[in-house]
Length: 395
Image (cartoon, rainbow, N blue to C red; front, side, top):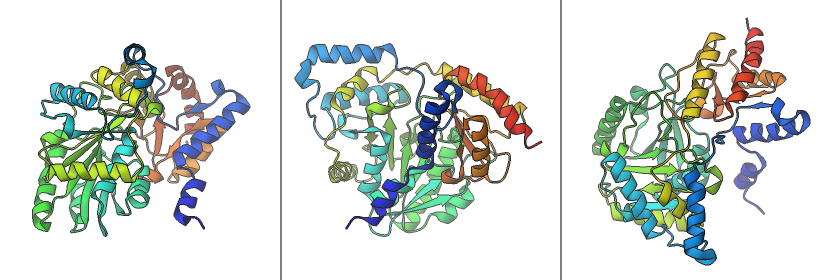
């Protein structure tokens, strides 16, 4: 009577969500102040004051009807033009309104790209560690196959020998995520150049373009003066998927976009495919009020210095306790090795101290755990004694 695969998806949440839901129940039992939930990437830093000002300005000037009206399916033209101008100023690009398609966050952007590209037999490559929902979006949403490349756990850059071996005539696109969830790694310019050269060679070999789908919700969350290479300047067949969930602390408002560069092969057809994918997935238009908010606040961010302070506390504190960590360069996650080979068992043991951590298995990286530090700094400070007690069990 019902789709078996959809029932299975509905009955089992992602591991991250399962732990998050457990945390809500546990907090009700012991008090939220006694739970140390590091499971989910839900920003604790408030949106900048300009967001509230933009909402009030729009409501005052547009009125209670226009503020909430439908827009064009691909998003309001003036909003798309403003966002293109913002990108052009910051990254020396040459986008116009019709290079952007507004979406309900990065998840919708990714889903629309997979749906727009997927044909029978196609494969999409994810590079571990990767956001687990890619599998759902590719396999259940687009009907394609997700191929996972093992992680280079020393630096969390790309293992190009493994990637080269995985690319084949069925490869439609490679998904990259930098800054990375869950490792916090930023792909270096050298990595991006090598990736671009490899995919150009493979595209010629197989006589069809192999695309990059760049998942960029953490683009502005970088530390220590690190620069993010803007991928379209290195590889023309790139779709950029973005969300304001992290940069402006607006995860629940579901506002983001896809960039379809004019340089992309058959760009107008590609844009039409994205529009068609959005239509087939039931995306009427992205939230209209927050389209306009994004246009006003596109060049701003929340107070990222708080995340940097949290990163430093966790990185140095965990390292001192004997955890093996690659120092995050961006995003708001740290991804240390588990203190035992079975990361799920380690995370279960951590619950004894009301520490909620996420095992790395679903990210394609067993033996690691993800710790989200977009939390109040005081939570990290208080948790370090508990991490010490947990670590002591393994000494």
